[in-house]
Length: 429
Image 1: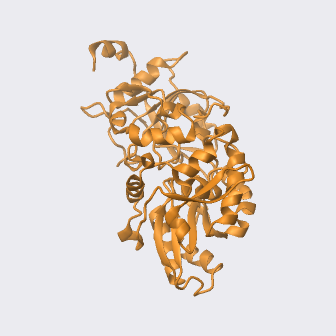
Image 2: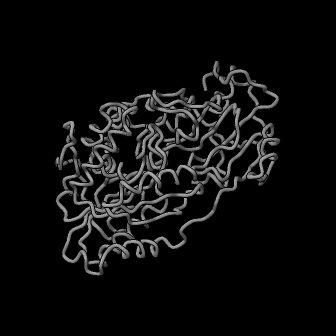
Image 3: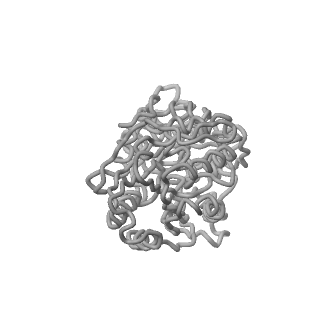
């Protein structure tokens, strides 16, 4: 480190930490393949798809067990007679380049070998209709050429807009299968109008496309599926708003307020579209979203490999590491920002040499601190909030909350010779 930086940061002392656990409703689906067989078979006759081609749309979001879900769905569709192929369904992710989108699926474990279905990656679309006000509705050309299309969609509150339809089945159709062209048209009036545009375009997509059903998924606060149902196109838009509210009620949270520093081990597109879930950290990439700030400084330490260099979310933090910065690929980040018309998430925070310096910089720059009672929280990512670390000054808050139990501590921060965090059992790669 530059000697001047070291002189400035030398007085910063890191407090002792405790590991705590947070309790959520643990109800989940234990037999994923069995649930997929059950729900799809309730919709389809045994030979309903005999001799038919089915495009399976799989996206880039961090759906837990996505590879297993995709494989199980391929097997079920084949069991009903279908000839199945997979279509990357992720808007402009991967720099809006087809092979990059294929690579993203492979990072998630969705490979041709594992799923038993070929992947047909293309950014080409066809226009399948238009809205009353003349907006063209795009659909992936490969998917549109199939007899039917099926999608896999996690339903949850979006990080950048509000509406009756947010992240979920409708968005997977309009933006996921719409590729860059569809995403661009849906975003063209900005995030403030995203909800109404998504619904408007979605209704045309559902009525004009070859969509058969969407496998709608809701995950609990432990990032495990607790709802999984094949919802036919005729019911999809009718049922999705209630499912969104159910998902909203299950959204986990950081159970503390007045945090001086939040340390996030990793951010990434496989975690959420903005790298960190804006609903959880209460910082938003869209200007029209009003947050309720409770964190003075945010430091993130790494970008997930599954993000494939897409650094949407860097701008939500105040400080990061050189390790994360070197993984950033502008060619894969900026098409996302240009399409969504939100640039705050792509801004570059202060970049420090390693974890140790980044954490100290976060403390040093946070305003109005009591250095004898620093309030620090460390999480793995915004999907994993059942276990976290807190500084000793926050113990009274934890002990007063019946949902929280103290798992271990106190312990000191550990860094290797390179200044990066020693991996604990919850943070091992």
